[in-house]
Length: 353
Ligand SMILES: Cc1ncc(COP(=O)(O)O)c(C=O)c1O
Image (tube, rainbow, N blue to C red; front, side, top):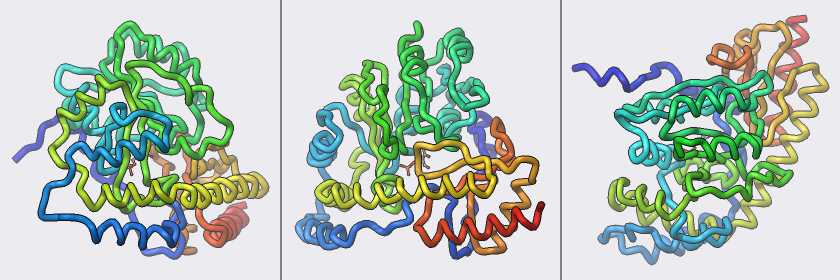
């Protein structure tokens, strides 16, 4: 048996989960959901009639998200994780005979998912500061893409896409669907002007796996024009958001303030961690997300990664990632986890001097 060649399978890509004390490799929140979440969810679960299919259009969830994110229900589409939203976008606007553009380094699932449905993917490179430049946007335009992926804050680099590049991309002659992945958008403190940027061909992607500490729940959504959302609604499998998940999202949105307070702590911890990394001589890239990309000026990140694992600390090994300088990426943890990571890192760096 032979799978389709264009699948672009990437065996060995996935982040290995090792049995360590401090796990800082997949950009989740270090905190459990607020205590109030379980009882709020429980009281909703008791009322469910699980012999019936769920509300296919998950109306209450759409309404609650629209209230929380200053939108309208008709502009919202949800998925089991924002990766599933990306899949439905690729199924609808990509596919055989269609083209997509990504600017690397960026979130690798954009090109991976596009390829799995047969889309041809053009890879363009970012500048040294990881920004998307005008020449690469012009190159993208000459390719007449059907989809262009942007990511703000960008994973794994942490920088924001500028309003200028976003404006240039959405006004391309080919009128591509522009997917602006804002999985880490809530962590941006200074309000981005592009937050208010609107265009009929722009779709913004969000997840409950980062700011809301609910990665285990698998929920994400996008906001776009009513036309795009109605296409996604036609393509997605029926009843894909189950009743239990709908209840959990409603419970989380009822308690949004408590989730916000926890995530705000992650921002404070991130700012402290960043400062400490600079103090011990690490080239930490400025970040607007819950992770930090680190370079080590001449030292081999792979050796550092292995040393950290020996100290029971797991970070993401990005040392061999294409389009990235040799580096490691650390997710912001609790104060104790960050201290354990910093102490292990400092020990390693001293040993390597
Ligand atoms: C930029 C970006 N987009 C989307 C996702 C997918 O998130 P999820 O499928 O958990 O919603 C991730 C996960 O790490 C990410 O980093």
